[in-house]
Structures are given as structure tokens and as C-alpha cells.
Amino acid sequence: MLVGAAAGAAAALIAGSALQGKPSSAEGHDLHDLDRRVRELEAFEGARTSSAFVFIKPHAVTDKVKSLVAERFAADGIGIISEGSISAEKIDKEMLIDTHYGAIAARAMRQKPSELVVQKGAQEAFEKAFGLSWSDALDQGLVYNLVDGAEKLGCSMDALGKKYDKLNKGVDLLKFGGGFYCGKVDGVYVINGFYASMRSQFTVPGTSIYYYQVQWDPNRVAWADFRGKVLGGTDPKTADPESLRHAIFKSWQDLDLSAEPNTGNNGLHASASPFEALAERANWMGVPIQKDYFGRAMLALGVPLATIKAWCDDPAVMFDGKRQSLFDLLEDLDGHACLKKSVGIVGSN
Image (cartoon, rainbow, N blue to C red; front, side):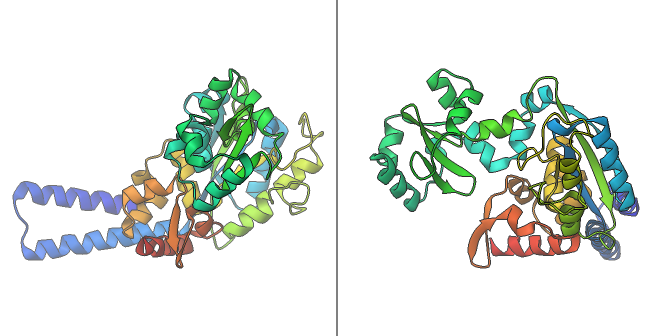
């Protein structure tokens, strides 16, 4: 609240000066000093608090799982700021899960194959595997994203996805890059057809996710421990024995789940970093970046708003002399380290 009050005071003072004409040099110095102090407070707030977006995946939304999650958060000093359900119908209509999965989903759902950057090595692998150059395949209208591919083949995205999931890697399924695949299905080439299975987990009518906005002291729980020890690793079977994911796996029948959890249906999702949490609050909760506490901290440190918005799609950025996933660079960092590295990334691009 201190940050918001200071910002409000600054805004009021500036507005008053504007009405009265150009401020004196002394007034201008005071305004400059106040602005600096407000920015410092914004940055301090972003560094001193950890806040993540967590949700129970549709396959695990039961009252018993909700109770398990709430009890574990309370035991670790993780406060629940808000919670609630988001229906599959809303997730599907507003493409919330597609924004959540970022570049992976964009290649499958929105981007046309001609818009994609396919590196030389990937093009050579394509020609070697299929006997056709990438450019010729594009010119002949043989390459589709998941949406257009399903329409071309006269089937649903789920049906196409099931065929895609049976392809053999290196034979009729090629990896072009991280989260970037091309597979041959019924005579055409489909980009990221595997995404159909990922998406369908969240869009079955009548189901929902159950979300939590949580907050905690990073001095009590490091972000890496929040993910690794509280939530648990991606594979619930081998996750930390005391983690939520492992607890759900171990007691899935007692928790009223219909099937044993696996790496895909592993009970829970949680933000991988303070920045991903910012992106997820913007997507799932509609919180404007300028009003988000971590967004304000980044802005206060000079990270442009346009850059923050672009980063929400997990682009490849230059850092340490090479292009890397923005999300990977910030993963598991606490607020202070995440802000510091964000400033460094801006300086490298």
C-alpha cells in the first residue's frame, strides 16, 4: 500500500503543478526526487514479495485436492490472495490455454507456416526425410498449422492430434527446435499437431481449472523450493516425496481422481518465475501489466512496457552471447534476481 500511496501522491503533485503553470527549479527538483523514490519503492516491492499463479488441472479438481493444496500452502506460510474456477468453455473461447502455452500454441493455432522461421539445418532435415524442399512444400500448399490441417483433412483437431501422436520421431516427425515440430499426416505436413492433446485437457465442456493467486516471503521459501519441494517435479511419481504432486500421485484414488496422474496430468501447474507469474496473471486474471506489482517493478527499473508484453510470449533473446528462451533464463529466480537479470537482458538486446 505504501507504494500505491506514494505513486498517488506523486501523481497529485504533478497534476497540481500542471494547473499552476511551470514549476520552479526547486519544485522540479522535488518532483524528480519524489519520482525516483517512488520508482525505488516499486522496485523494492517487486523484490521483497513472491507471488505466483497456481492452478489445479481439470483431471484433479476435486474438493479433497483443493483441501490438500490449501493446507499445504498454509503450512509453508504461503498466503492465498484469491481463488476460484475458470470453466473449460471460457478457456476455449478466450484461448486462455493457448496464450498460456505461448510459442508452442502460437505455431499450432495462429501462425501460418510461411510466417515461421525455419533454420537451415531444419530445412535440410526436412528435405532429407521427405524428399521435398521446405520452400517447395510451402509453395505447393502442403504445410499447415494444427487448425488449418484439421480443416484440410476434414477432421477435428483432436482426431488429427491422435494421428500425430503416433508418428515416429526422426522418420515422419521432425523436431525443428524447442516446442517446434513438423509431422507428416495423410500426405500433408502439420506444425505442432501434438498440441491438440495438450489443449484438449483444458477444453472438455463441463470441466474447469481451480486457481490460486498466492503470495509469500522469499526469505522463508525460495522460488526454486516453491516449485521443487512444495509443488514437486514434473513427473509426479519421482517428484519430491513431500511435494503436492507426489501426494496427489500417491493418493489419487483417495482424492477422488478418476485415473493415476502422469507427467502430463500431474495435478498442478505453478508459475516458474516471478516474471511468468506476471504473464499468467495478465492472461488468466486480466491484470494489466502496469497495475501488477511485479510489472510496476520492472517498469520502475527501466524495462519498457512493450518489451514486457513481448516477453510474455517467451521469445528467444540474446544473453551471454547466444539466443535463449526468456522464460528459461528467468526460471526459479527470486524477485530480486529476476529483476536484476531482466535489466541485464534488456541491455543485451
